[in-house]
Image (cartoon, rainbow, N blue to C red; front, side, top):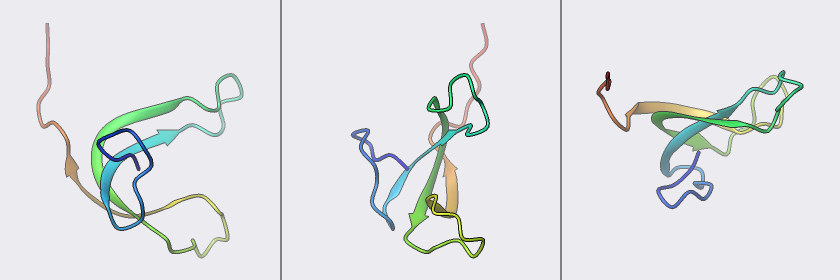
Length: 68
């Protein structure tokens, strides 16, 4: 989650969801901005992974499609 200033949003604060494809061996640290908004959580996933936990998705930052 990123806040409006581009820094990591703390748990419980609305932020933009960004994802990384961890299985891509060529560029594993590339982050994709999805334009979705949501809340992160400080909870730990029951599977035991230590990655950030997504609490909820609240909507989209922009709800339109631009075509040429």
